[in-house]
Length: 311
Image 1 (cartoon, helix red, strand yellow):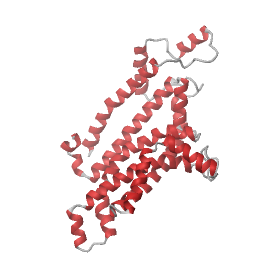
Image 2 (cartoon, one colour):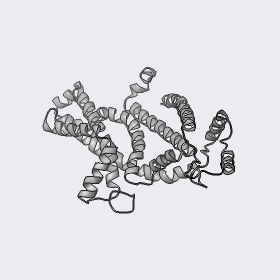
Image 3 (tube, one colour):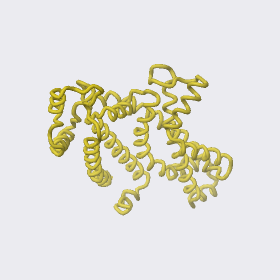
Image 4 (cartoon, one colour):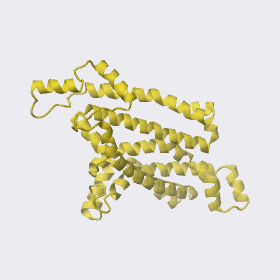
């Protein structure tokens, strides 16, 4: 297992370097300037700002300097939030984004696994068709469509729940969590159904049934561990997608998390904040994928072999 983890980490390093490099040059070469305003600044002031933030240096020199700072864990100061560093801004928004992601993941796992298992136990019946049809709708309905629909129907027409804020009004966390969690519940339910159907068709399951083992015991003790492997493998991308999906959801529901800071940084051309958050999310994605690989390898030791891991 240590060799397996080390191999995954070594594979992630060049990916992170590519992300940092591509993000740096794409942001710097994009039209616009972090100090552009409706009313143009005096030339002397603009020159002083560019010198202070070292934007007057050659682009390659800025890139090398940025890599040195990143290696020391320094994301630099924000161009738009005066007196605040990128690290401080990430620290301010991270708890909210993580809390939203945790609620959404809980909804996705509870709804997805339960519906997938039920569908696998009753294939080609209404107990299979109904949840899988809903899952297909969830896959086809992105969060930027589902969120406004929930706001319109549940928040405005029915007036059941608040439609903005986070932690200020009772119930204001429900709609954003459902919006993010429903899409991933759809994927999880289909993966759980497929994994369970494959396991339930194995010889050892038929042997257990022939011995008179109850259906609930077969599912809980024999089928779930193997049947949930596709779901476990999906957890890394799902967690990354939940964080990425927070950009849209936090903007729709006016939630003060990392997603809103990221969107505002893009509009403001805040170079350091865009790069810092991009790198931070890239590291989180690597960590989540690594954790998912570790759990999958623990559940299936064959994945730890060099041949399986390489394939």
